Image 1 (tube, rainbow, N blue to C red):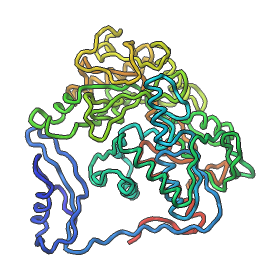
Image 2 (image 1 turned 45 degrees about the horizontal axis):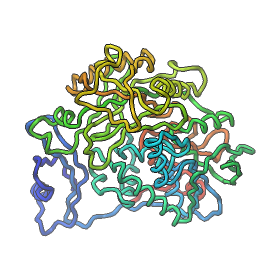
Image 3 (image 1 turned 30 degrees about the vertical axis):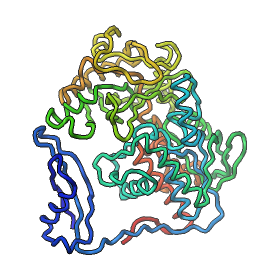
Length: 514
């Protein structure tokens, strides 16, 4: 049976949870054959009485496993997968498990070599445009804490979590309300997934940039990779939201695309202990894991919201094009850095940017280049206190909160970079959010610009069968093509896309069955 709303005070062990569930169930201890934690969350509404809240499963019967039905495909057909972020990884994994032998084309390096590229930008200010925080094995999420919470509802959420655990992620991600893997753990997980795909007969080609899709008779016949044509029978486009050259290539080939709303803004940093105090109160601030938040405001008219919150984390240099500054956030698994940070973003609507389906891309580029040139064109980031952002100028020295942007930074007025409607909305929104989380609007909070890559500004249109109208064997998928927003939703879309291809060859719909 499932039992919800079991509450344990802070400091009590999960062994006591078993006895609490036993009491609720009416079962005898010796008769229990199955006990499992389904969900664990923190109830911090009463700062004097914070509790962990659990849902569990307990039974006197053996656990009945749910069988996953994945038909085996017997065909020599070649399926190409462009991109090896969460969508591409899970798509290739399930294609390989079904007997297909996918060929993955990833423009960046494997995760071990990719780390060296990231370090080179930090230490030498040298950007590799094909291997960086945005591009390479694991996608952008590899260097962004590995947050696995999502607003998507799908039976495949559990599938993704189980696979992550199988390949080395902490087991607790299967039941935590806000699971994360950590940027220190993710490289090991994604490399293990790559090895499984290869073991099953797939290929993963790094440093392999797809520059063209060869379309003939309404079908993709191949892709141009580093100047060479590689034949494919099906093609999955699983690029990330920073693959701007791919968007332009697809537009030039005649793929149907749509302008899409997105968001831009800055990273905001506070002391981790201050966020803990605001969220937990003084009684529990030092006894609980680093606190997070997810907050929003509509007071400015436009939506202003926090995104990709990194407790005890760092602001990272995340450019993928020469001459631009882009920020993102990262946390290691322990989340024990001095600061906590998140993006604080303002909604951008299609009517805000230039005409043309890729007008949103050009707005992002414009802001990134302004951020680059405003502080010396050497990948330093423009930073200022929230106080200075509100009054203009960048004169207040950093006191309690020090910027963590690792390349380097200079004080600069972000009002001179962001469009006026964004700046004014952020000021109103941050003040309003500060009424919900007191320290959020602290004058000493540090803002680092610019954050432009929270989601794709474009959607590559696909039909009910998952394919593009211009080519009936091309499957646009994942975050870059406009069908996901984060690791979990991208992974789920990758699985669903693999299933559509498997179903095409077998006539059987993959999925769960009792």
